[in-house]
Length: 189
Image 1: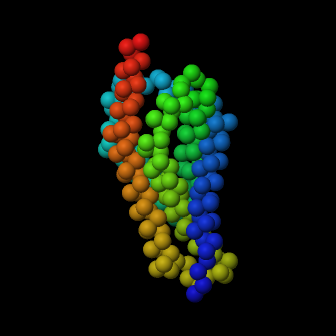
Image 2 (image 1 turned 180 degrees about the horizontal axis):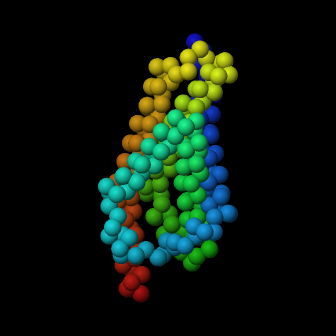
Image 3 (image 1 turned 90 degrees about the horizontal axis):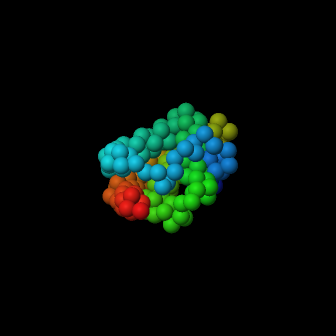
């Protein structure tokens, strides 16, 4: 059996493109989502968020991305675009407000360096099964899913979940502390 080296590239590229399309849509074409400003954190929002809530929200997202593979990637693509939109809207808000880019970076980068790759890897997992079905239907393979295909799918899913758990912990324990400190510093002004 010949290894198809394009397979991982195509599913990761598809996942990344969906996320980037969402990012551009959020930045250029989603004015209805632009109601939240990074400088407008409320005490209730910050107090109400914790690691478990962030983790459950992120795991729900990962499950939607991964399980979307059973719906031929449609749910996966939609969720990737929507998640990209949120970041695009946040970047647009930053550009239009008086917020400092350092505030944005402090609130996004610590957990984003794990969360964004986790989302994209989950998207690749979500596209894995549809990709293999299309290859089978096109006559490029003899079985719909092989043990190797399932193993790759599970590895991608596991890696994405690990990254999302790390991101949730960082968001709850580092990002939220930064947000609280920024909120307290603006109250003193």
